[in-house]
Each structure stands twice: as C-alpha cells, then as structure tokens.
Image (cartoon, rainbow, N blue to C red; front, side):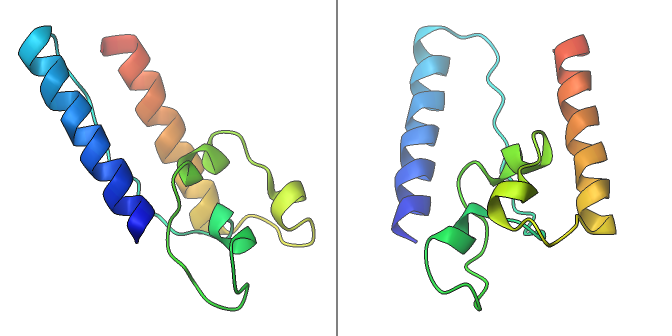
Length: 96
C-alpha cells in the first residue's frame, strides 16, 4: 500500500539520520499481527481483510473494540498479543 511505503521510507530515513547525527541506539519494530480489530475496517470494504494498519498495535495496548465493533469480543490470539506487547514494552522500559 501507498501508506506502507510512505511510513517505511520516512521511518527508515529518520533512523538513519538519527544514527548518523546522534549515534545513540535506535529501536524499530514492524507490527504485522492482524487480529479481530484493525483500523482498516473503517477504511473500506468491511468484508475483506486489508491487512494491518499504522497504529493497529495500539489496539492491543489500549483496546478499543467498543469503538470498532462493540459486538465482537477479543479472540484468544488477541489476548495473547496483548500479553506479548505489554511484556515487550515493559521490558523495553525496564532495560532499554
């Protein structure tokens, strides 16, 4: 998608510039989990899977299923992703 290329190119450019000018560590991750909820459901055909959208990871740190689809509960995989992301950010905050 266009937005994928736009975000990836600008993100990688920012990382390279940061490394060149500041030299301190840079951390970058790619979130590719497509769970029950995604911001893409509001961007087009709700019957098709449009993949993962920028900021979909935040749906697993700050669940907003009542906004996106109030009648659909989190799946077991969604609950597992919440645990994974919470632990990831906890460990990053703790150890850097």
